[in-house]
Every structure is written in C-alpha cells, then in structure tokens.
Image 1 (spheres, rainbow over the protein chains, first blue to last red):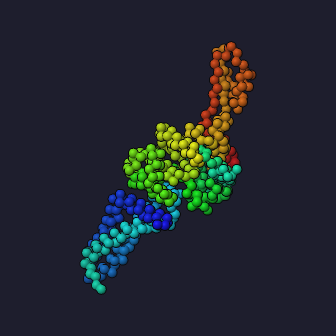
Image 2 (cartoon, each protein chain N blue to C red):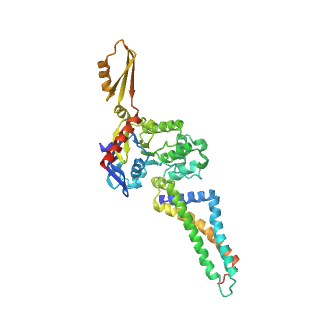
Image 3 (cartoon, rainbow over the protein chains, first blue to last red):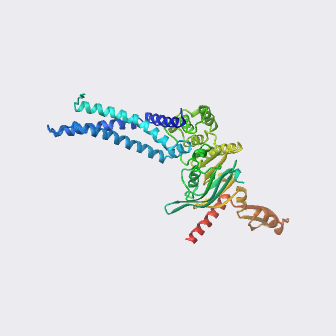
Length: 133
Length: 291
C-alpha cells in the first residue's frame, strides 16, 4: 500500500480505536440526535394541525442535526489534539495535513453513518412514513 | 565547519504581534553534542524549538537543521528528528505500545513492532506496555513521550523541558538515557530551567527575554562567577574576593601567605544558578534601560 494511504488509515484506525474506548462520547453522539428528533415529534404532535405536513420538515431537519453534531464533535476533537500538542507531534512524526484530515474524515463518516441510520429509523417510525417507488 | 553543525541558527527573530519572542538568536550545535538551552519560563526556549521542528516560521534570520531548512524541507528533516514537547502529548486512552506504533507509522518504519519493543525496553516500560497511558504516573507518561520521540532512531533529538515535574530519581535516569544516546552519536538539544541539569550538557546557551546572553561550556560558565577566599589567621577571618578564581587563587595565596598563623582556608564559589541569575538580572536592567 502507498505510504500516503497507510498513514491515512493509521489515523482512521487510531480515531476509531479512541472512539471505541470513549463510551460517553459515543453515547452522546448517538443519543442526542435521537432525543432532538423526539422533541420535534412532540412539537408537531402538539400543533395538531391537519394542514401541516411534518414530513416536509423532519427529513431536512434530521439531516441537519446529524451534519451539525458530527461537525461540532470533530471540531472539539481536533481542538483537543491541538491543545494537548498531539497534533504537533503527529506532524513532526511524518503525518501530513491532508493525511490527518482524510483520516479523521473516514473515521467520522463511520460515526455519521451510524447516526444517520438511527435518525432515519426513528423518523420513519415516529412519523409513520412510507416509502414508495 | 558548518558540515559538522547539527543546528545552525543565525540572527533569528520571532514576533507574536507586538511581542518579540526571539531577538537576534545565534546558536550553533555540533553533531553528537548535548546542548542545553537554559532560561526562565517565557524566555523563548519552546518558541525556538518550534522553529527547529518547522511548525513555526521565523520572521528573520537563517536556520539550518541537519543541513535542511525546517519550513521548506519538512519531510526530509522530520525523518531525522525526534521531538518531545513540554506536555506529554500522548493519546491517554491508548496503551504505550499503541501510541508508539501510531507515531512510528508516520515514519514508514520497517520492523515497527520490533522497534517499538526495543524503545519501550530502553525507557524501561516493557512491563507496563499494554496498559492505557491514563493509568500511568506522570513520570511514566514522560518516559512514553520520550519513547515516542525515539522510536525511529533520530539523528537529532529536541527535548522541550523533558524533566519538568519529574522526581530526582527519574531525572537522573533520563540523563543517563540522554548521555547513552549522545555516546551513540545522537545530537540532543534540551531546554530546561533547572540549573542542576545544566552541568550534564556539553555546551549551554543562556536565554533571557528572547535574547541569548551567552554560549559556553558549564565549566567555563562556572569560572565566570565570583569567588571568595576565606583565610583564618590567628583566630581572625580575612575575606578576599577573586574575579577569575582559577588564575587569581594562586596569586591571592602567594600575596596573603600561608604562614603558621593560618589555621583554615576556604574557597567559596558562586553556583551556576547564581551566575545565570546574575546574568539574567543584568539583562533585565539593560532592557529596562533601553526602553
């Protein structure tokens, strides 16, 4: 394998390994979007307006929540890397900026996919959505 | 001459906004030396080391590290240097082995596992190799941090206060490691504010408020201090100040004579700490005067 990809996968592997150990972080990143969607469900339910189609709003909102949370969580982790100087150490130890960014991107895509599937399942169940061809 | 220099810094200036962190810094470190950068907190030691590893750029001056320019030839340089930051800079939820493997992978090392094992053995942490770093004591974390800087056998080791917050026994062990590495040909630049460590270095640079006050060997620096010769003659003590005591002492003894009435002779010399503090004090007074 090319050294570039080897280092990208090394960063991904390390980030996923850290995520696996950080159960609180995983819990928060999976529970928070579910809770927000549930609050949204209560909101639309309380409006009880037959002319308002909730499904028009919940899908984009669900996508935004997943995108926003993943963005915030990745930013927090990168800032932590900078403060603890592990980012500097990574650079001095031969990792390049692009390899670090791609490594993080791959790892957090895994987390975002899990979040998206959970949010999609919850929206489908709560709002009784049906798929049609 | 420059062929044997591991670090050659000439007229380095570094500014952070209106703060001048480094002012006209000249440092030359020969290969195989242990070079100490001595200064108080905020003197500019870490800033200088960050320039050497290429994570920061100087505003003026020329800098060559192992013959490369740190900002322009990062990739070539970083294969050859090891850097230990002031903080442990480790992933606390990974084990020591996992940390070393991760940082080692950045260097495309062959036989990585073997090198990780050897390095952990060198810092005497093999027994705790598979424990998460968060379970280790502060001193052990520093040893893991040193191991991360050593895993690829660098030609130049840059250590930013490696013994800060480390107990006496461990400090002595660290210095044994550094001497062993230097004996094997590794050049070491170590920053510290602990004077008792300065005597282990081959050469020292005293830095204060971003300016290099002097560069010399610890022995030569010690000789710059004042010495006081105490002579007890007939129950009375006489005091004689000596400026350059290795050469002035014989003259003083000849002048004052060691006759039968002299019952005791003592030579009191300034410690390295006192000499450095004196230099730093003079520099602060000069800076204030200039302002």
